[in-house]
Every structure is written in C-alpha cells, then in structure tokens.
Length: 498
Image (cartoon, rainbow, N blue to C red; front, side, top):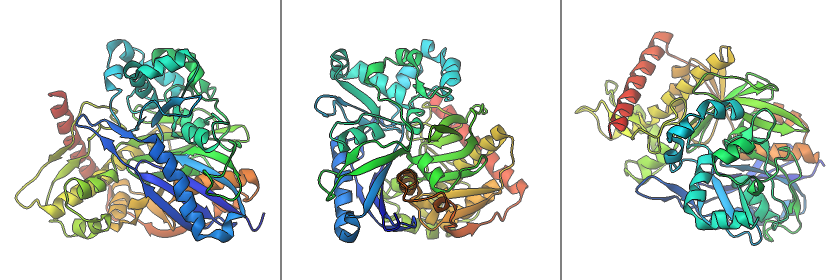
C-alpha cells in the first residue's frame, strides 16, 4: 500500500489532535481543537463527552479538507487517548449520564481512604500491579455509582456502558456497533487482572462496578469497527488500533525492546520502560501496566505517573498570568537569579508517583526578596524535571539496570532549559524527536502495521532532532534532589495538618 495515508487521533487532556501520516510514517499535518476544563473549587476535574466526540470528528474534517488528495487514500486510523478518565453512557442511546471524570480528579479519595478499602491495598496491587489510588479509574466509577442515580438504574436494566475514553470514542465513532477496549487502557482502570488481561470480578465487587457494563478487552491492534467520523471522510475506514497515550508514545519511540525508556511531557508525565513479556514486580512507587498486545502477545511496562508536569505551564499562563505563551518560559528561567532557592510543588490534585497521595496541597517554598517572576517560572519548570528524575531513579532500581539514555516527547520538549536540566538531574542523555506528537503517531503506526501499510522499519527510523547530555556531576544531582525531597516533605506535612 505504497500510496496509502494513515490517520492518527490523539484525544488528550487539553484537546484532541488529528494527525495525517504518509506511507513513510512521516507527519504531514495536524489539526488541534481544545475542549473545556470543567473544574470546581474542590479541584474536581471533568470534560464534556459530547464536546470531545464533536471535536474529534471536526478535527478530522478540518485536516482532510486541507488535504483532499489524501481522503480517498486513507487506509485506517489509530486512536490514542488520555487514560484513567472515566465515561459512562446509556447503551441504547449513546447518551452520557455524566461528564467524563478526568484522570486528574481526586474525587475517589474518600472511597480509597476508607479503612476497609485500605486493608485491600496489597491485594489490589497483587491483582493489578497498581498502587491503590483515586488516580485510577475504579474509584472514579465508585463515585459515579454512589452519586449519579442513572448509573445504578441503567445497570439494573443492562443498559449501561462504562469505560475509559477509548471505549466511549470507539462506541460513538462506530455508531454504537462496537463496544470494546484493549489492555493498555484496561490495565489503568485498577479493575484488570494484570496476569490474565481480563476484568477481575473481585475488584469489580470492591469498587461497585457492574461487570456487565464493562467492554470486552481486545488486542491493541484489533479492528475496532469502521468510521467516517460523522461524514468527515468520503468512505468509512477501520479503527485498527487503540492505545493509551503514554503507551502510544513508547510505541511511537520504537521502544520494542526491554529496558528502553521514555518520558512524555504532557499535562502530566508518564515515565515508562518496556519490561518485556513477563509481569514485572517493581518497588513501591512504580507500577506495572500493560504496554500493548499485538497479535496476541502482551508487552508489559514499568511506569510512574506525575499528575502535573507541563500542566504547570498552563497554570503560569492561565491562572497566575505570569506568561502569555509557553514559549516565554525558557528565556525567563535562564534569566532567573542563580542563587534563588524557590521550590514549586504542583500538588493541585495530590501527588502521583512515587507518593500516591491526595493529602497534600500545592506549595511554593524557599522564597526570598530576590524571588520574582523569573524565579517562579524557573521553579515551576524545575518541578517537572525533579518529579521525572525521582520516578526514573525508582524505575531503574526496580528494573535492576542502569539507564543510560532517555527518549522524550510532548510539547514541553521544545524547552531547552527544561531538557538540559532533565539531563543534569538524571545523568542521562536525552533524545528529543523531530515530532512531538508521539502518542498519536504511535497509535497510527500500530494501526498501519495491522493494516499492512507499514513494516516495523517505520519504528526504526532515526527521527532525533536534538540531544541533551548531562553537564553536572553526581554530587550536584544528589544535592538538588535531596533539597527537592525536603520541599516535598514540607508540603506533605502541611497537607496532613489540614
């Protein structure tokens, strides 16, 4: 299929992207549409499911309208999605019964903190490979069961669908003909048995989730039905992959061998290592997830997740009004006073790996009279690199291997200050790709491989745009990370005192 095109969809926390890739796997063009962030005073975060579905179809239409020559030659599409974000809808009509409860939302903490639930934490980790946490989908579904009357009413009538964003979009894009998920997304619900890649009846009972409302778990490169994106395309094409955005980025980096590691800098960060074909048993603070299942073969990953990484840049712009665009941050950080010791702890919805706690507040520490706009911007950028470095240390210890390089992706990789600091704090060489859209491109590659458009050579191409090598020694690294950890402990102490 030498003249075919492939469409990638990346439905992420801040918006939805449609990507057009050619027969060589190169990104030709993209269209991005943002959606509302519905946030209340409690820090609860929601998305409008109808808006996201409409944006998905509109992004495809806008993209294809610019490239009419590609429309007739589209072979398939792949779907990458934000993970742990829960959707619930009426099976017979496709109508959502509530907004999507976003992965950042801490509303499940009241349930996961119950003593009888906490007592099950070792069993939850044994079954799922995950730490018991409101971060994952299960406790968010519990909240829906306890607070949205239609949830239990429709479940009793066998007219309820519950899933993460991949299951909702597949259902809508196929006109309700296909209801399905796959292991990378299912493993992040805290309901999938990591050993069998099937739903756990035991955990469904614990979290009040009706097993009958969950989608079947298919291979990641399955054919998930046909779609024309609500008429945006002249003919339907197969949805030939679905994958979580973080795993999509790992696949897009060509990380097919155990030990290969990447960090994605999106609203949050996923730091992930290919762990091979057997279930790993990492240290606490790092979790086990499914990477992808291709042709029936399941690849596992070690992972640590950060709730707010590049999302702090949006906070600087939209809330603090310190910047007018993300591109300003690099110059401001480089202009900051070199002796300033300000730390920014972005615990707006708790802390993810390796702490997994909602009992903490966002905190700024160590300010002095020299602390101003430049210093606050730098501290916010520093918080991203510190968090990633902590998780990478744990992943390396869990894998029992010394990491030497790190592949990175996401919009924040354009920030040279941040990338150099990340190299310095980890002691690793960073490889920045030419294209930042690795999540959606990974989904497109997975689909194109399944459809026969691509071979594995598409993942072996060197797409490196920049390399950052560490310029600091081990003593500097350990000193800076120790100072960061003291700041985190101070924020934790404050949160526990509230």
